[in-house]
Every structure is written in structure tokens, then in C-alpha cells.
Image (cartoon, rainbow, N blue to C red; front, side):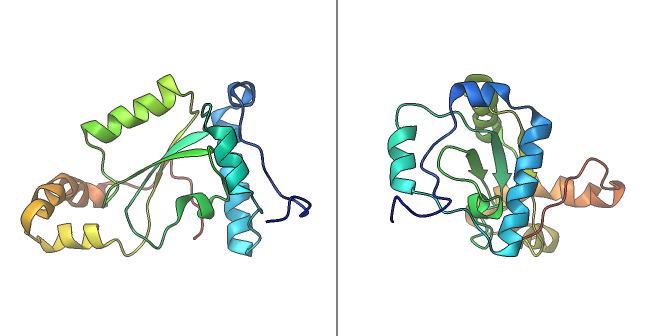
Length: 165
């Protein structure tokens, strides 16, 4: 990658820049990045340079809880680079003690300003929970999703922020 390329980003977020962010600004940045993703205008980044600069410390903007679905590349969907986001992934987007601890680490230790739960359509884990699939370790995982499936008709969607993939 040429370092003279127009728009090339080689920097990572500093602690001072992270401290100045608000949750509202982070949501705005994620929306702006999502608009670039939808338009096919992703930012050019020098990942090698960003990895080297992030090696001394990380100051992400947010932590995103996402499904393991391979069709949803979280950093690309929000046009973010190395060090911008923590991403926790589990089939069906549910929280267990390990993921909750990871979120606490992201926010209370590393200073992330926002927790975002990124859902998607046609989720295989949700479909499996609805269908009552039982198979090895999947059975226990789906038992954590089923209560949400059973209550889903009771929610009206208030508080959701919508992004496009």
C-alpha cells in the first residue's frame, strides 16, 4: 500500500481523543461509517501501520456485540480500523458472564464509550432456537436464546438504532 495514497489512515485513536468522545458522538461516527459502507466508499487504511501504533495500547470507541455470522464484518460495516472497536461475537448475540466481563473490561478498563448490540436478519441461531434444535453444545447455547425468542413479541423496538448492511 502506498503511503502517498489519498485519504490513507495510518493513525489509531489516542487516549486523549478517546477521553473527548461522548456516546452520542460515537453513534454518529458509526452511522457515518455505515453510510460509507452502504455507498461502497470504505476508508483506505494502512493496517500494518495501525497495528504497530496500537501495539503500545488501545483506546477503542465502543464494544460491539455481534453474531458470529460471517456475512457481517463488523469493522467494515462501520468503516472502522485497527483499535477502533472491541468486537464480541457469539451465535445469537446473547450475553453470558464471559461476554459481560469483556464488556466491563472494554468500558471500565479500556474506556470504550458505548456498547452496541448488532443484530441481523436471517440469524441461524435464532432460527435454531425457534425450531428447538438440540445438538451437543448448541443445545445449551440455544437455551440462553429461547427466553428472548419467547418474549420478542412483547417489545416495540424503542431505543433501537438502525444501521444498514
